[in-house]
Image (cartoon, rainbow, N blue to C red):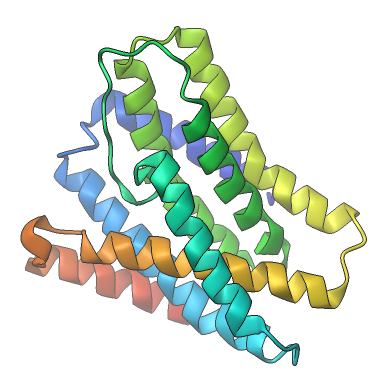
Length: 222
């Protein structure tokens, strides 16, 4: 399931893009808010205590490095990770920078997944709306359909690849802690940005507040 669930999430995201309009659908926005709250909660409840209890120095430095890396990646991806979609109707060029950004993000997030089933669930929930945004962007662009499917396939395989690399390569406990710290920084930036941008004018209605609270409670009790 470690390798299958992230792929299933991309397929679900693709199906959502067929039936909903990701940029404006209420259901999609609620899913995005829930995923942000769940991912943030798993990061705070599980990943942060674990990485700081490892006893290695410079953990905080690597958390900030991960946060800065995500800011740079979002400069390339234009914020797809937290629900932004920018159609480019005048261009038929394959979005290599977008693929590079999202692939690196997905590869890194796969490294710690074999250490926590809750984190796996959080990443899967987060990946569904991201995949929906990607599918909608790609299928509304003028690139060939096979290239769009190739893009989604590469994106879907990167998280399982990260998990496989962590499981099969000799990575020391110290380096593993530092990689996890960078992933924490990435997750902190992505999840908090989702929550801050969850509603128009940065205001929460009762439904979205309930969804966010549900995501936090589910992460806590799992």
